[in-house]
Length: 157
Image (cartoon, rainbow, N blue to C red; front, top):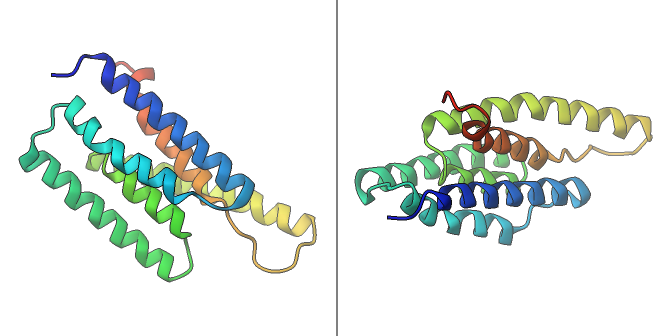
């Protein structure tokens, strides 16, 4: 049994990884595959630190992450999301149960609307040609930070 410090350390690590993803997406419009792999590979440690049983808990988590990945791959195929965004969401779904991931998706959509609006306004104000690239990783990261940090900031949950 891991100590009580390990889940907090892993949450902080995930928060830092999300911040890194947001910064790189904002700067270069790319979310590194290496970053997404690290997030995914830390999930089993998260499961162990939170005492998830192999069956059914981990099996449900894996199935849920696959579902999220497939659904958002459809949005990628339609040109509505980048590949790094889809991979980041799939990796986060390995960490988060249904309710937390649902909250993340709702917050991501709201923040993503603001990010899109700001990006389009900036694109037009600077008279750039072509379609603007939306750094949606920023919305994913902020939503992830909200969901990961909420238990620490709101002790009533």
